[in-house]
Length: 573
Image (cartoon, rainbow, N blue to C red; front, top):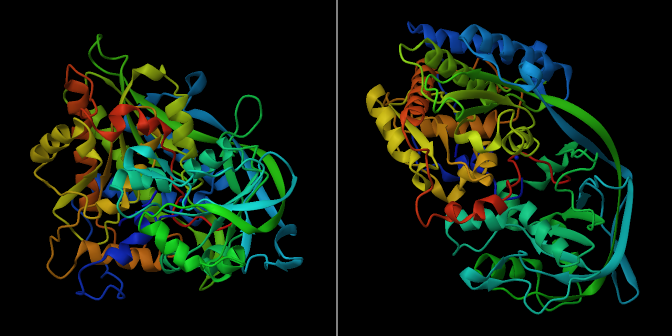
């Protein structure tokens, strides 16, 4: 995110923080189009050098971009297990081993058989596959088709507590819902993220009897993430978790076909009406509900090849020192996967993912080493999990958070590190999401002890807290924090926000995210120390971390909140 600005964040549709960074950059100097200067001096800190060695290993071409379910990811998982052992951890996975199996379904759509036709007054218009529309994979049936009347449902939001209901007066039974992404601007950041979730939108329309969904692109979507960029990768598969019955989790079998339509083709869906797609999108953005039956009928079809696939989370454990608390666990996470092989750029098709997220895994591993080597072990036990399938929608962390290798009720907190863009030196850290729980005081204390400043999330409107792996734990009611790179420059000639903007514009999910980037490993070592010290204090406290009274997540809403679409996800997924 996720995400995701800084990093993330895939899943629908607000550009996760990651792609939002360029849009949010507020500093014209230095030039954000110029690459950050290389750092040539080798660190004198052994921790920094260990992190660098791990990044170079995990981002090596031998790993082939660490895509979930590939030999390259398996090779990376084996490497991390070995490094966990060297750091002083013991196996924390299944069957007394280092790994937890993550069962998945991998689905690939076919161009042949894909269809979106608009019928009005005896006339039909067929939208062009890839250029104007793309179906999403159907994880339940290889051949799916539906023809039905269409109904416009705004942004498909039911939020009575905010005085908003796009479903009021509408009957979706047996119909195809036509919807926009996002949520009204007047919603607070957390509820806007909740209601922007594609998962939440699909759940809502499926529960009301819809048999299909068309998600319509807008001009704002096009600015944030051009249709052509996403559509170019339509052949890449998407994934879902596989349940014990062999069926996909969160796959909405009642929805026969879900498709996306580009902003350029959006008006075709509103033919015969008195308002354009742009007018309706603007009304939705400003929070004016008002769905209605459309005069058109739609025909949708998709063919999908679905395969079973297993991947692995890597799980290491540091046993706690207090007999009364050792059976409670602080969980550290960083996603191991990246996007693998992709479109070739300057002769290179390997997307190595050095910053996203070999760096996060290396920092987490160093935090484990520091805790294991400390004079005083944490009272509570620590779990370190290099999760798989984050790029596919936080799937590895969702599987672990809901089905951990220790008793579910024993998990007390999560510390996540995802894609810290450390390409310019900083003097601070950004702990995202701490304002929701008692973890804020813990992080503040840890940072003071390390001697580092704590800065607030510079882009709270991006709601990145719900866009990376920590959110899988939040959904389970577990307080969490996403530790991110600093934003306050330690060198007046190099602005961390500008450097992050350059990375997002040029190297995010591209082959140039590799180990020759000017990563400041001293800052990485500092982030590892903040993580370790935060975990130590969580473990030392008599009481578990808790949500703040009255917070959005304290009422259980967070458990309903599904991850939004990962940044970089293709329109067809």
